[in-house]
Length: 112
Image (cartoon, rainbow, N blue to C red):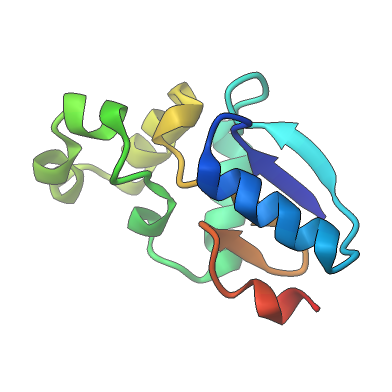
């Protein structure tokens, strides 16, 4: 399992602690230093069965700066993936990639 995070993110820190406390093994990946590629994101989004909007960090500064709330609906899937892959700070974090794909810190109980 890959745990994609941003070390300065308090939610990511809580999620990492939860994984450690529950003895769940993972490979750590920094979302800024190793931003997921278009190919990775496309695969993960499709495998997750979730709407691509769930992969956007809607509470982030970058999301607000770019005015994405009003733009996403008019963008194609490919345009959204390209945008996500352009800046790790646009991606909802943490992101779990394994048997399940989980954007954000929720539903981790299903990992036990």
